[in-house]
Length: 258
Ligand SMILES: Cc1cc2nc3c(=O)[nH]c(=O)nc-3n(C[C@H](O)[C@H](O)[C@H](O)COP(=O)(O)OP(=O)(O)OC[C@H]3O[C@@H](n4cnc5c(N)ncnc54)[C@H](O)[C@@H]3O)c2cc1C
Image 1 (cartoon, rainbow, N blue to C red):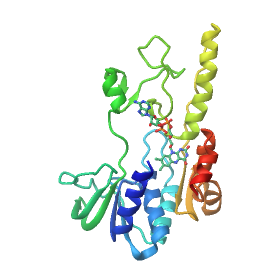
Image 2 (image 1 turned 45 degrees about the vertical axis):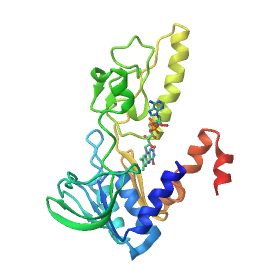
Image 3 (image 1 turned 90 degrees about the vertical axis):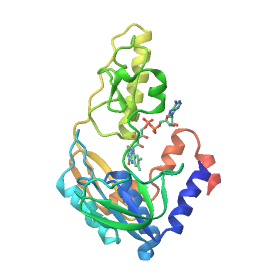
C-alpha cells in the first residue's frame, strides 16, 4: 500500500495538466487535495458526466453542490458539469488506477490535453469476491441484496452483508457501516439466544462532508449545511485517518509512520 501511495504521489508530482474524471466525493476531494498542495503550479480540471454529488438514493441540495463547486474553483480547479462521459476507449489504467502520459481526452461538451488522468468513477460493477462466489443472482448493481436485518437475500440467515457491499438505498458511508456493524453484532447474539432480530433503520436524508484541501469544504448533514470551519476541524485536517487507524488498534503504527 505504501508503494502504491508513493506511485500515485509521484505521478501527480510529475504531471502539469491533470484531469479528474468524476463529480462524486472522491473526484472532488482528489481535485481539492492536489490544488491545495500544489497551488496553481498544476492545471487541474474536473469533468463530471452529470452534476456534482449525484446520489439517486438521498439527493443532495443545490446549495451544497454550488458551495463545493465554487470552493473548487476558488482554488483554481476548472469544473465542467453535465459534460457527458469522457471517452476512455483508448485509455489504459495502470495498477495504481491512473492513466499516465500526455493524451487528448474528449467529452460531450469539450476536450483537452492532459499529462495524467485520474478516473474517480466508482467501484467495479461486480467485485471479484462476488464473481467468484457464484452469487451474481443476489446482486443489485454491484451490491448484495439484503433483508431489513442485513441478512443476504436467499441465504439461510447466517450470512450478513453490511457497509458498501450491501444494496441499501442510502449513501455509502463508514459512519453508517459502523451503525450496521453494531446492529449486526447484536443480531448475531440475538440469533444465538433464539431471540428476534432488530431491523436496520435506513438513513433517508442526504449526508456527506467534502473537504477541498485541508482548510475549505462543505457538508450537508441530514439536510443541514456546514461550511469551511466545521469541515476543516472534523475532516479536512486529517481526512479521518487517525480515528480510522485507532478503530483497528493501529494508532501506534500510524504514529511510527510520521
Ligand atoms: C475519498 C472517500 C471519502 C470518504 N469519506 C467518508 C466520510 O467522510 N465519512 C464516511 O462516513 N464515509 C466516507 N467514505 C465512505 C467510506 O470509506 C466507506 O463507506 C466505508 O469504507 C465502507 O466500509 P466497508 O467496510 O463496507 O468497505 P471498505 O472500507 O471498502 O472495506 C472492505 C474491505 O474488504 C476487504 N476485501 C475485499 N475483498 C475481500 C475478500 N475477497 N476477502 C477478504 N477481504 C476482502 C478490502 O481489502 C477492505 O479491507 C469515503 C470514501 C472515500 C473513497
